[in-house]
Structure formats: structure tokens, C-alpha cells
Amino acid sequence: MSVPAGWAGTQPSPVGQRSRRNFAGLPSLLLRLVAIAILAGVGALVAWSSVPALWGWTPVAVVSESMSPNLHRGDVAITSAPPENWTPIVGQVVVVPDPQHPGNTRIHRISGIDENGMLITRGDANGSDDSFRTAPDKVEGIGRLLIPGVALATLDLQEGDPAMFVLQTVAVLGAVALVLRPARKPE
Image (cartoon, rainbow, N blue to C red; front, top):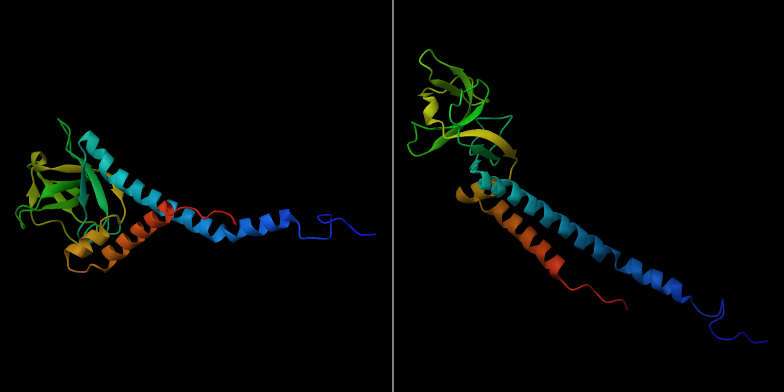
């Protein structure tokens, strides 16, 4: 007695073939999901560093290690202008004009207030207070948020070392290409 074609045991199961095909596309799917996660992370960092501007807050790149271990070179501190009738508090992180480098600012912590009401500032990593004092009305910003490391590649690029900036750019462009690539059709 012969068994008709398509009965159990005579040909590979179409279900089995479909399952193997579905697993064949798994690495591509996982790679696409990783690319989406990278782009989501980049988008979140961009949002965290730019959305606060809607409230008048300003991003400030940390350019040295003077505030380590709390703020590091390449971090972005989001600051706001001091409110009216602001009372400085020892321990607050502030952005003040840097008289040693006119036109630049320093982001340091208030370490004290002298007898004339002038602010004494110091970087967390520094062994002594800054050599200058700042009037409270000269404070340009008060620290509100911190976004770690987001400006590091840009600082490196500005200082003549483009490697990290190029690597980040290639990673983001590669992720965009993976996400936008048309999905393979099942065979």
C-alpha cells in the first residue's frame, strides 16, 4: 500500500521549514533592535540636554576634572539663572565668571561666604578655594541636572583628537542605516 504525498513521514513538514526560516532572520532582527536602542539612547541624551532650554535652563559642558568625582570632563551640567531674591547656599554648584580667563566661566561649588557676602568657590577635586571671590549677583547659573559624558567626544574633537567623535558618528550612522534598511522577505 502506498502513502499519499504529504502524509506524515513522507516529506519534511512545512511547519518545520517555516520555523527554520524564522530563526534564520533572528540575528538580523537582534541587530536591528540594538540599532534602535542606540538611536533611542542618543535621542534621550539629546532631549535631556536640549529640552530644559524650554524653561530657560542652559547646558554647560564641563571641560576639566576640577569637579571630580562628582562632575567629569565631558559631562553636561544643566543650569538655570538664579531666581530673584536667591540666597546662596554652601554646597550649591554654580557657574561664575572666571576672572583669570576673561570671557570664560567656571562651574564650581560654593565652599563658603565671606564677611562681605562674597561667594567662595572651589572645585571638588581642588585642595584649596579659588583665588577670587564672586558677588552673588554675578552668578550665571545654578546646577540643576547632570548628563554624564555626553560632550566628551566634542571636547576631544575641539582639542584636535577626532577619534571618539568619528567613532560615535559612524556608530550612529550605522544604526540609522540598520534601522532604515528594508527587512528581508521570507523565502
